Length: 412
Image (cartoon, rainbow, N blue to C red; front, side):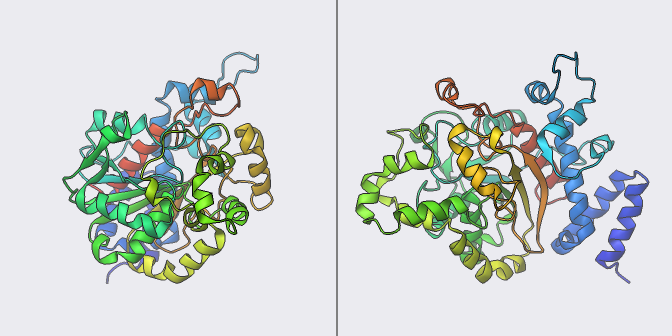
């Protein structure tokens, strides 16, 4: 008789209690290879969270800057807490107890990973004075040889319109190389990756889910798994407010005053002269697609369909406080706190999670929406506001994602 998932959970829990972590990992890898829906089991979900967080701690304790940011002195001398505890208490949130004491093994996988990461950036991407994972992606390619391609997702149009950009990345290899430099120098055309996993940050997450919903025949066989990073999966109350301001304005007038409107979204940090694909801008469509009503309708219509695709989705959310965000985002963070005290200054926990059986939240990260994705903003901008130094150990988090997925056989 084959084991049911509940039988598997009891067996693996017993192994974990005895500290036989490698056996747990091997057994889970085998079962997921046989049936991807193994990840829907509640115990398996809990284990996945513990395991990723442990891999993150293993990597983050090597980051001197992160460890420095996580250390407390307060004039009382050297921080005597173990490094793993410092990192856990500074960069993770939630009721984790003594998880930092777990002595799990290093990742049980080969670090030679051929599956291509196709990254889908967020709203107004390319207009802020930094790019998501701009330092980390090139480092990962150089150190591990991992293949990373950023979809040429338009910075301001609807999720439905951006489906074409994701398809071009997956089926044609069209997108941006992770090397630093002007966008025009980094745009590449092929070759198409053989198989991929998708990672969406902020609006990039609903862009990806929309692509999967509308193009399952093309993406279903190519996409191994999906990662959402502070995803605006359920929309954003900020988008609701902004859409209310512009929905009755003339569309041409909105586009003509695009830079002024961007200043309302991110005052003092959006860059003139950084706009690409001007003829495709759809301000109302872009912001409208992030409203809570539109995203709720999408999930209501397509949630079951996405679950039936049997593609594992892992999610990461951010959480911060008004005193930890840039000055010009403080009011938004306070407003979101009326809905959820653990918001990341742009989305709440509920909005950043995908509530289908095939989706699993692995961690609530302690950082604001930009901190967990962007390198530090330029010094001149940091002089005008605190909390733009972005100390979250992003590289450690990405390494942990790769190793975690490879360990479970989801990529390879």
